[in-house]
Length: 107
Length: 119
Image (cartoon, rainbow over all chains, first blue to last red; front, side, top):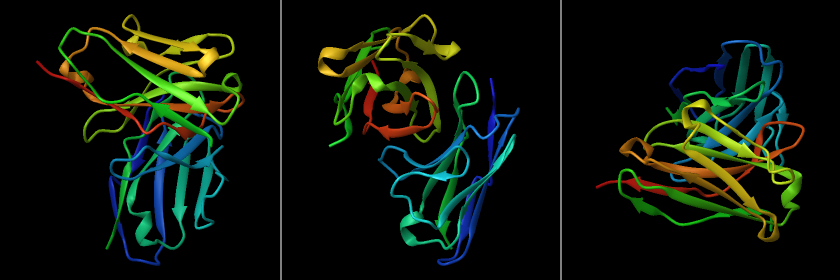
């Protein structure tokens, strides 16, 4: 099983500042990685797939990068509506697994 | 409207089974996989399994083998997940999610079905 490890667990960022979230896979998954945003009481929402492709309707301030085992989600200018938990998910093999999530809050 | 509509909350006794439904609308049901993901209170997301609605082929996470069944009814564009031998550890929100055939990301999610296991 591929283990996905996210850091940090919590990230406090001032409005308008950059937020950088990391996700590491225990083995290479090429670019088979997605990022999701989840707000309390809601289902996850797809942000990024194939490591760097923004999903439909996702603002340009969200970007993804990386391949192999190291991946990054960047929010270029944090907005209040971006407060949420962000998790990564691989689809480079079976079973699919998720990271434990990074909680992004406003400083 | 493209959506996945799930069945409502359930309360079950330990040892019982639960069956959650996921009705697709607004797209061709057989063109996308349906996956099941659960989230225990305050915890992360856990992938459980998937079905190819076109071929009825299923894959499951090892930890659920033997007590999970995923089926579909193409005539009503609905997938089902049944979990047996429930324990308090199965208390969670159960989501269905759509995945493209040539990819593995989940681009459409149901709102979730809360299953509470309690005596």
